[in-house]
Image 1 (cartoon, rainbow, N blue to C red):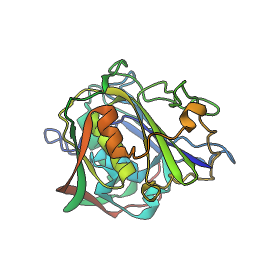
Image 2: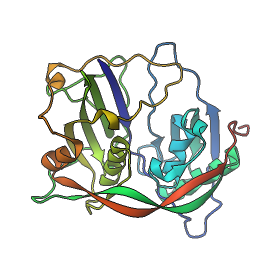
Image 3: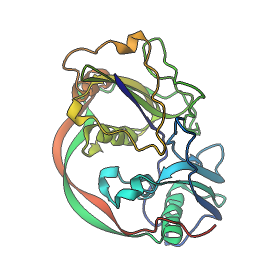
Length: 303
């Protein structure tokens, strides 16, 4: 039996230049290579914490951040929309930045773009590329997701010490916003259970895209943040590879018995999204903006 735990947070920063402020920067920025993990210990590839809209708007801390993820966040693109050298998905860095008072999320996005240019010498350009996509929309009968009970400034969840915990139905427990997907592979049948808290539809579309291995475009028109659970079987061929963990890591323990039971035959992710969440996926084609990284230094300039 093989198991993987995929995690995601809820950082969303929008692209674009804000009223001509193309050169705005963080007040202070510390960039360091992430230290190697303890031998055999887990590595949490978590989201950025702090910044506008959180309880700590003046500082953002981002640990174990791959530059590929940072580029996709800074330019508000799904990973499919970023073309970059392979090493940018492997090598990880710790960022601590001070945000000017009153800065918006949009301005923070510009600051991240400028930090990438200044500290990594990053040069990018935009291209338009047609993709096979799924459009996420509302199914007949309406959505079945619940408005989140978390406050608007809820922090992303933090991994608890020790093995992950599960509720009585076998879903991972969370202590903040974000999403966790637990994939259990038994006899070649990958069974997935996802729990999301304070998740936007844009973030959910990005998560679906990771699972389906192609872009998913949010067409729901839903603008809130939501809590929901989702369980489905996966085609083994579509199972995404686990993220690279420097030094490896101990796999999580199996979920409680409820989560080990196979879901109904034929519960693909597409059918599960419609039956359980009241949303649907429709195949289409769409031209999308792609960020191409032309150059980036593997070693950032000194702090």
